[in-house]
Amino acid sequence: MKSLMSITAILTLLGSSSALAANLNIPMSFEYLAIDGEKVESSLFNHKADLELSQGSHKIAIRYHDMVQDDFSDSESFIKSSPFIVTLAVDGDYEYTLKPADGDIVKRPKSFAESPQVVITRSDKGTVNYKVLQTDFTEDSFVTSLFGGGNKPDIAAITTAATGGAMIASSASSTLTAPVTANEADKGQHAQQMLQYWWLHADDKTRKEFMGWAIQQL
View 1 (spheres, rainbow, N blue to C red):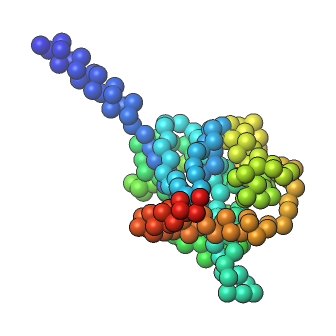
View 2: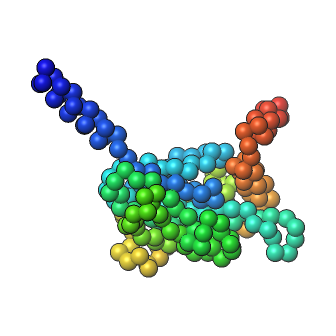
View 3: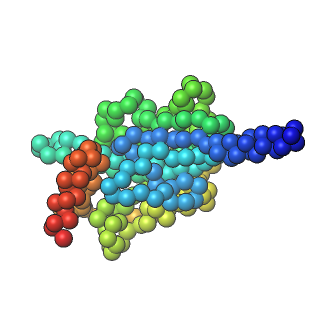
């Protein structure tokens, strides 16, 4: 009887230990691109806010994107930063949160997008061991990224390689670069970005109504 109880206790302990994992949460205006050499899967209409992390060090590519008021008109425009690489040391089953360094809300979106400054905190108020590395990775068009074509860098491939360690610089102040061809965003790109933005900020009822309308248009 004692032997059976001991075996059960050991199996329970092993099972609970293997299930332990940390979690990293990011705001709506940020997106995961890659982690440890693997692309983070997401879709146009599905914001991934939480990323499960095992114990150890992880390299995570993240990007800031949001809609901002245009300086010369009443319209809004879409801004997107170059990806930045977060190296995070996970040493427990903690809840981590990434936020803009100035608080929960980005106060100067355009300036922030040029060089995103973020902080990572832990739910238990413990010390977080991390560093942030800025990059110069860019892409020429949101639309061509979706539908192909054009002379553009593959951001997913670049960030996957970067988080895998092949392109990480040794100093946190270093900047990663990649050859790119920048094109002026066209009307189709802007419309697609607007659609993405409003979908991510809509409630479930609005999304269902929109999907019903969109299906009728096919």
